[in-house]
Image (cartoon, rainbow, N blue to C red; front, top):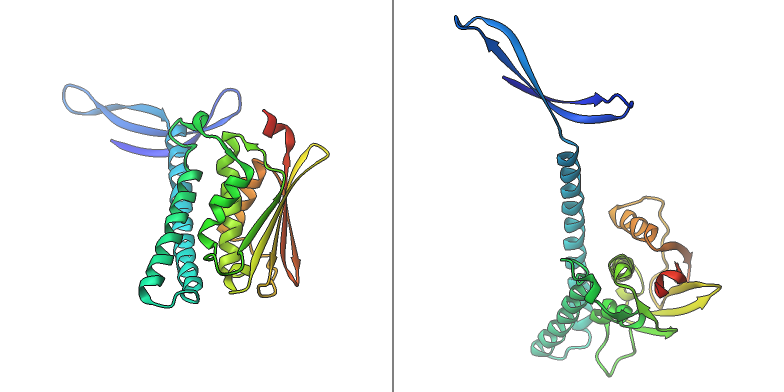
Length: 250
């Protein structure tokens, strides 16, 4: 008996992957007189395999980002801590905020999306909370403009976008500098919801045409929401996210 995987052409011309098993057929004397063939469709299996690979790649990407964020949090906190105990407290608080932001972005899984209720400002605050300085330092970010409810279906892709922006800012942008900050303005214009992300006080951004997994993640998340435009201004990266306003009222 042998088994192979191969594409199969249906009568309507469509191609589907199948697993073909061939077994010998013997007569009473043991002589091979024929063969039996069993074809099984494996489209679902291949789709499940592809989904597992995507999830594993996203998990690997997120884990690396979390390590980068944790390193950034430690570096930023060290400048504000006078003692090891104070540093431990500040880092613990910021990692706790990071965990809360992660929990907020995951509330749409497990069939519970209908129970989620949050606003645009709350979501942005949750994502950026781990980067907030202690009270006696300048703010690391400011949120202005309209604050509207975010539908459950939009929380995950929008959180992915904001999380990726914040991670890049912590690695290479304004959040990598002690005096850097982010300005986020939310507006409603011509039936569209606009989120403008502006980084100030960081190193001059370097544009790249290379598309890593993070860039592809942004592109996929943006395709579910609307449009994302980046401007590599020497003073700091600006990003404008344009969302369909009707989706917020659905």
